[in-house]
Image (cartoon, rainbow, N blue to C red; front, side, top):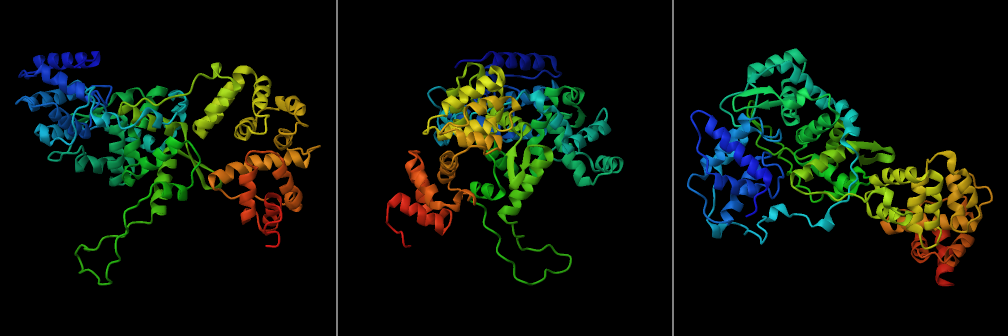
Amino acid sequence: MTVSPSVTDAVRSCLDWARETRPARRVDPRFLTRLLTVHGHVRSDPTDWDRDDVTRVVLTLSAGGPLPEDFRATWLTWCDHLVARELLGPEESPRALRAAVEEALPLPRDQVPWSGTADGAPWWGRLWEPEDLPRVHLAPAESSAPAARACPVLKGALRLTAWAGAGLPLAEGVEEETLTDHTVDEASAHLGLPRERVARLFEVALRAGFLRTTYTEVRPGAAARDRDDDAGIVLSWVRALPAMVAEHGTLGLRVLGELFTSGGVWTIPDLVEALHPWPAQAAPAPSVPAPRGSASSRDEPLPAPEDRVAAAVATLVHVGAVEPLPDAGLRITPLGDQGMAHRWRRWGISLPGYPPTAVMTARELLLQLWEGRPVDARVLGRTWLTERGVRTGARELLEVCAELAAWRQRLDVFRLLDGTDDGLCGVFEDYRDHPVLGGWIAHARNDPGRVRLEQLVVVMLDTYALRVELGAPLPADAQVWRDPETVTRLMWGSGHPAADGVLTAIALGALGPDAARAARRARFGTVGVGR
């Protein structure tokens, strides 16, 4: 078994604390090393624990053979050491972690649901193959600091932290971390908030690291002292994210996960479909009133999936993780990216990034943009253009997509150049008469000028090709389609690689009956002309 330096340092720290505390605590250094090594297959930081880790670790330890009789005492000492030295991360409650260790039950080796692997790493540390991981461009965390500070929920948690002062007692006799009823009443009155709101903000403040707990008290956390640090406030936000969306169960993070891994623009119906299947609706209850003063025995019907997703999205927008776009679109924000990337890192999963833009050719850039997340494309593309100079970079990109077959690249190039400063006028003028790029140049300049119908047909085929591939409806340009016979004939004779598929879709009625008849004539000769 290879022992990492971080595990060695953690074991030494625990042994030192156990000797210094009174009465002194016993620790089995060999078992503690084994425990933290197994834990390290997922968490890179030995001090980063949650209650789910306890279950996974005890089962993996069981798969490796019998545990020492006093394993629990060593494990509990490790927990107490984390709490006493303020090392436990804010993602977990000290009480809940200790309770999980007290209840952890090792199994006989032949009853463990999995066995150790050849490299010693359990299966739960290798849930993703490298090729399945999303490629993500993460902006520097500091750039998201204004958005994190603007989060209303985080602001509320900071208000509660300031009110809490030097410390408060925790409620006794419960496993979870909760304030006493008296403290909640005082906070509610002082802050002008409902009691339920105080309880939620307390949980957010704990997970953000603004407050921390021992087994009996609430004390100021390190993050509250460092809240003026840009990277620190973003870290507080990402740690608190699960608590900020907890009212929706797991749905809030599932929605954000879809937006994160795809990096695209979604609508609520898209998300409902992607998150299928949904729990069945509760059956309607018989129309018999419950006795006065008694609880109804019927199950409350679940809201419709669309309503549940819409509510989760509203919360994600409220905290700054999702950006609403025109036409009901939704996209993850850079702050939301930080939140999801943090969750992946906690699982020991390193997300692949992009090569440095400084070493990419124009063709390599377009390949990265096509294979990467759409939300990353504009940032990477603008960085690439800035490094080379906008005019020089634009010429390189236009040359790459000047061949008729490079329709995917053209879509990315003109999406990237859209909105670029006026320094491109001279570049665009040089390509105005280009048979493939001329129509796109006219569109980019919003000036038809001398554009020919043949050039516009290339633009139509490029954009229609992507829509056909995605199963999206085709937009009808009334002015261009005044002469469907000419347009479809030019499409078929263009040599465009997607002309066949586009004309087939039009022939099947994607743009109405007149265009369909013209497409059948162009594509299939006289077949179906009279239909």
